[in-house]
Image (cartoon, rainbow, N blue to C red; front, top):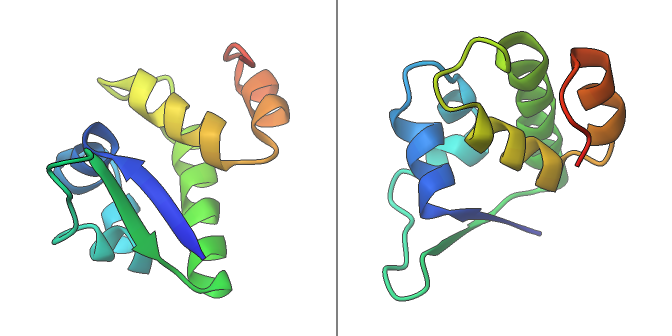
Length: 97
């Protein structure tokens, strides 16, 4: 399976000191991945790696959405990748859409 990221999302995951997503297997695979022609990065991940990344993304969102300098990137990642985003957003006071 593939997980797709934009260059802005890649920079957020790798370069932003406020996130720990780079520490996941999926995050580590982003280090050398970027197609300048399309601006999209595709990371191959097995089911366990995908679940680990999504669990960490969920944790990051719940714990940090009100404190990070670029909440729109974290919110966008969560909205796009977490199937239970509306419930999480509601619980954290974020807009569901």
